[in-house]
Length: 310
Image 1 (cartoon, rainbow, N blue to C red):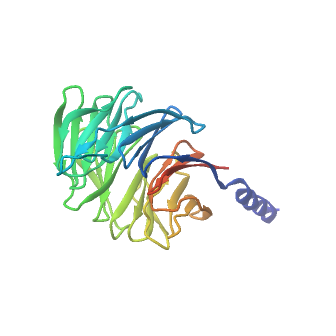
Image 2: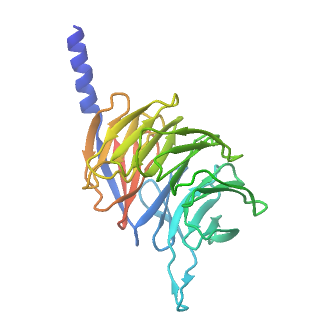
Image 3: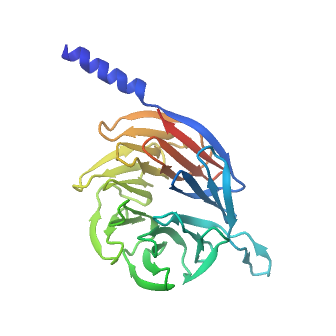
């Protein structure tokens, strides 16, 4: 009887879970980053566009960063490197290629007083007025948007930074980069509270944090899942892993594990690859869970793909 029940359970898992491509959204340029709030998907691209899409894929709004003047005095598109939304969703913060942070509150992007000569890798709101700015030099700044002042700046590591993540509660943040080490820090004080290492041995391209679990995507062809107790599981790819993401309950990982840019759905409890799906034709830039069953992904191509776990 136990054997029969086990077979039925295992068979139901195989039948119940799959990753389906639901929609392809076309964009004028490659999309670098994604954000989601209140049933609206936001994206920024290589020509400085910022888009807002409805759940059906309809473009609701669009904005564009101001053009840059080059050495010859000509105006050119600047890249919108990354974006994030405030907890209320009323403010969009966008990092420009020009080293400035722009704010969008319904109208056109407005530059803040913040400026860096470094490349801004990631932004994250701590609350409605406090914004984290992480640069490639592994410098993290806390900006007060109400006063337009930098509250604090610190270098969290000597190695270049690739990505930053913040918990849904906004009480813990993490950075990762070329050292293969995850730095945990308090987003309000910028004080380091811990380090996660041993899983990756090379550059970490992307990091995601959900339910106090952390997943990394690495140049060493590894996806690492760090648990709250600091233990970890390792999932190997056959190529450089450029992107990975965790579901809100940390039940699933989605990662690009091969040279064909296919997305792999991994069950974190069993460690098994449930399925793999084709869709992107270029290197992944970001994978984002919209909720427990819906995912958006973007790559170095003019489209955003929307997926569903069924």
